[in-house]
Image (cartoon, rainbow, N blue to C red; front, side):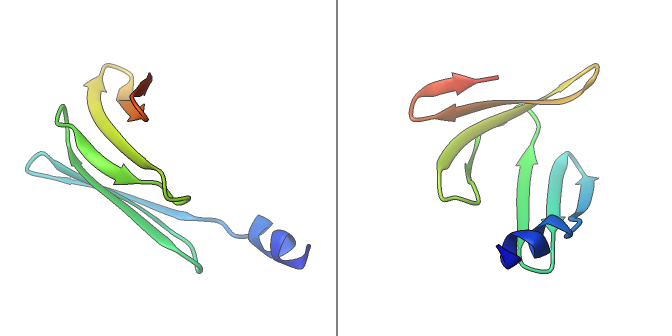
Length: 77
């Protein structure tokens, strides 16, 4: 219970950088840092915080970055 109360108060820091078409999105907390590196329109593999293996392609659309995610052969937009 105490761990949940402590985690509830943590505010993650989100860093987004792009250089020469290579994007880096980093989420930092005092407990964990997660980094995703990708190039737009190119499929890459990602491991989620809970250990799932995903195949992801991120596209640049008019309203922002939109991912298409494959997990166990099922597509999620």
